[in-house]
Amino acid sequence: MSVDKIILEMARGAREASRAVAKAGQGVKNKVLLDLAGVLEEKKDFLFAENKKDVEAAGEKGLSAAMIDRLTLTDKTIASMAKGLCEVAAMEDPVGSVTRQWVRPNGLSVGKMVIPLGVVCMIYESRPNVTVDAAGLCLKAGNAVILRGGSEAIHSNNALGRLIGGVLTANGLPAEAVSLVPVTDRQAVNILLAQEEYIDLVIPRGGEGLIRFVVEHSRIPVLKHYKGVCHVYVDKGADHAMAEKICMNAKVQRPGVCNAMETLLVHEAEAQTFLPRVGKALKAAGVEIRGCPKTAKILDNIREATDKDWGYEFLDLVLAVKVVPTMDEALSHIARYGSQHTEAIVTPDYFRARRFLREVDASAVVVNASTRFNDGGELGLGAEIGISTSKLHAFGPMSVMELTSSKFVVLGEGQVRE
Figure 1 (cartoon, rainbow, N blue to C red):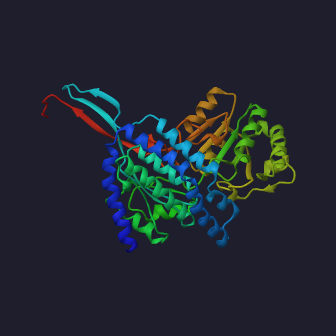
Figure 2: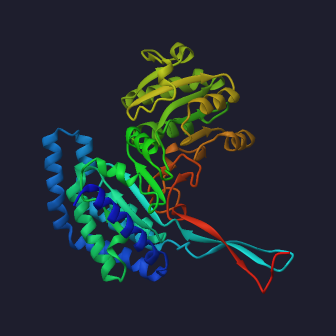
Figure 3: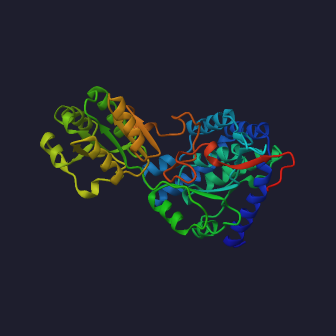
């Protein structure tokens, strides 16, 4: 069968399956999630055997150690996927709830009811755990989902797809509610992106190159984030111990993730005393500092920042540092170079904190805490399918509620429009 026909049949099947999932009750959906959590543990030897094929192929292709690490399934990974499914099952089911309701002068009762999006297509790289996370969240929100993982994880993803399909059918739902693209041909992505008749939303998750490709070629709405250029601004009067702790966590804990700090802004009133303190700690952790001219006068043995360093996502132990004369300058810098992902301020001043919250345009704005908290689990949303930096229709971590839409429901007693 040609790739075109495979994708077209998948898209049609997913659209038909979405109707069954949309009307499934909370009990059915939760049982699917909990049963799948159990099956992952029961069938882990099968999963390990299929995953081994991908890991060995990745080694032969010369993929990086970091990529192979993300690709590899372990007991811990399986347990984490199962735990995530249980957490999603325990979440409140928003589908069918009425979030707003009011009565018009003519007696009509008008409300907004939460509904599934329909068919979600997710295109992603490497991590097989994303397959389970995406399937669980989409099902909980009443959606069907088409999953297109990276070619490096084809055996792992197909194995997971078989297990998911078995659990769905055992619970009376169509296996097509979770479809995994079974081919590695890159043409499949282009064909998927043209199925606007059957697919309602595309979510790419991976590097900036993948996301830009999807946005440029899709006929379907895309939720995206290109990169995470996150700032921490240390304000006038900030507690230096608190600021150091926050900066170290934001930069060093996991430098290769999208919510890590990439630029540190420091008010000039604090720079002379705070920069030597935080600079020593950062260098001890192996961080390369690239500073503005004012920073270079305070810290020894650092690289001078270039224009390219502002607004750059290093994803590494590299940090751009700038001294700013005012909060206005900090806000202007963030507005120019930020990526609408996560921005943080360290300040003791309530009114300046409130101003920062109000004026900064980002999916998460943080006061006196690390940028690393912009994560579905950390914010109490359970698992997430990704972080959106576009505002239509979701902004920030995407969990169950963000995978729904709403419709107006109107209740009358015979009213007609005059």
